[in-house]
Length: 305
Ligand SMILES: [Zn+2]
Image (cartoon, rainbow, N blue to C red):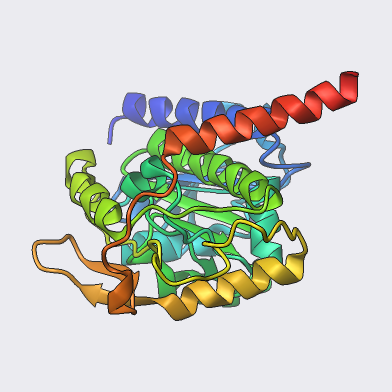
């Protein structure tokens, strides 16, 4: 790799760090970003520096075992997690790790973002599971990440944060934005007492579009269990307790199983109940967005009035 090309990647990391900090995805010196320079060389952020105030000369170059090759600073102690991704996903060129508050709230509550609610999430990320808790900077965290990273481009890390990957650093960063945006919308929908899922048919259609976006890794996601009455189908359950969220989450898991679909890019999650296969779209993305906008307007109106 030419020095000029590496300089451009250093500048990209500085820019992504600024955006992460500006959006409040990290506090203090949290978070880390890396780019694969070649098969065995990784450019990454230094430890003990705010991601909002980095300069290109601060970056560290390491090999796939984490050994420093160039740089005056040391790499983040969470580098092991990045290296685990590069070893398991030869297609991946960049990794972003942050602690976006709403998505991290789901990771703390133990609620995966695995429901087919928004079309753009189904097509870009699929489901976003929670990797089991591992003490930061120990081999526990890379081991937890290893279990999920072959099938997912975005993960929540239990009681910690989120991890996204991509063919370049901006693609990985945008997935972090998508996860946090999805978490915010899911939280509002759950507070409103309803979270209507896209039908299985629509999820299959959207997953077939994934090829058009250049995404090949499978990411199973829960479609509408449909005609069965359940916590998501009821309209009178406006409970917002965390216990209720957990119960719904468990129900969803029970309603889903991973299957290999013909002509698909990989595994899919569909309702295990055959009666649930002919579901209809209960609420389009536009309708959901309008509902959220109305709720936010009502809340703001209440505050100012
Ligand atoms: Zn972290």
